[in-house]
Length: 331
Ligand SMILES: [Zn+2]
Image 1 (cartoon, rainbow, N blue to C red):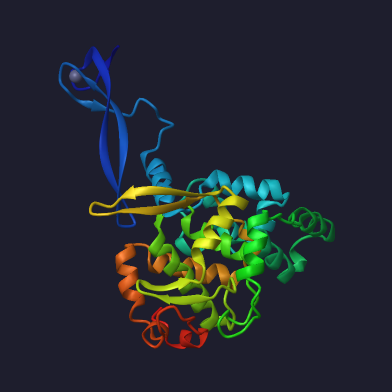
Image 2 (cartoon, rainbow, N blue to C red):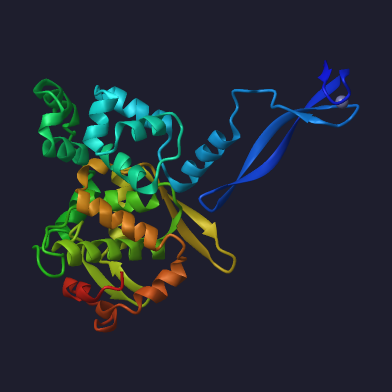
């Protein structure tokens, strides 16, 4: 294509090309494609041929995806579906309207704001946020939202009911974290850890242990009511194998894959999005903390880490681990 080249000061043959460069976004080097055109005679590069393409915007998108952060359209869609104005939504979140507006138009949100926004998208949290500040919305809007938040009950498979009867009907005590075993919570917690992540079985079992024990220490009850036992590779949910099989019959949303880890083959789990609505704010906070804390740990590393737990050192093989050991939890 012939265009005017200011350097050659005449119309010259010009071609388009792309170049990959890295942009530093909060310490992460994000590769982005730049499009440009250049003069075939002098080699000079010119303006992007697509003025609507913004490399920084693109890098933000990649960064958000990497970090599990929410994209601008998702934010907009959420408040639109909720039927609230941007002003109302910003008050629900406790984020300034100017800031929210910038986020919705592509600015990169802070980590903490992202967390608030994502939490607000979970029905149970949204309900609490609205209940805490009833003056923000009209009675009518509030009722409409609450109505739509009512969640449906879930049905279990037969095997699962049998398993619950046999292994899950123990009384709430110090071995269950003071609450009854809740199979759906247990399952959704597994999904939480395997969502957007591939988790090996050893690691998954430890993540469950830390989530339940940490919530017990910080808030007085476990999350799932699961009991944990002493195994050679660390604390594990009691009857974990049974639960996994029973759960897989009930729901097909957790995928298990054989994976080659160099010197051994192990099972790795991935999952669809969990049902956020069944968790309380404190449970979500603990889950997020545990997930983040061990993000970079391999199965082996978390196994060794868990071996240092008081509850592990002072328990015996095959025996249940009391939640009272949570007081000295390392995280
Ligand atoms: Zn030229």
